[in-house]
Length: 150
Image (cartoon, rainbow, N blue to C red; front, side, top):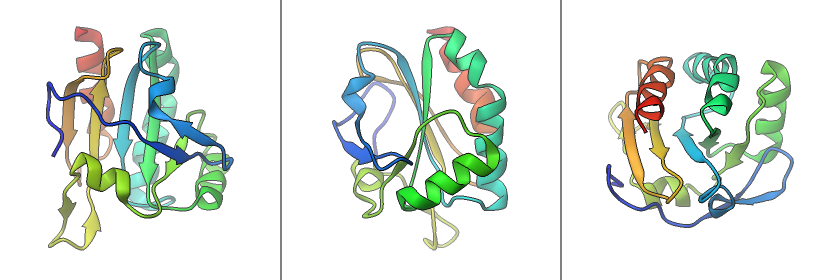
């Protein structure tokens, strides 16, 4: 599993519009709050996404980009983003390759994809990490604490 102090691996995934997004487009430009979540439009994931949405301008003012990743297809991401007015990219990791690359653990007896947030500085190094399946909205508070400390 990627830990604090590790450099993140390069990857490219499609966003909700079907456009390929390479994570390195952000490195050197902004701090990145990269959050892995289980599934679009489920109760916990909706609360988490809407909390990131509600704090998005705060993250932007701090020089951050928020990016969500799940194994849902771009079409599902698009519907989710429109329904909840999500202003940030949602990336489709349909083959779970990036989730595996980061070593995001499964939860609930290995049945559900894990919920982990990484705070990545402008050099591509992980400066903070929060792993909690049940406290979805706490990911936002934890990410803001780390970002403000950078």
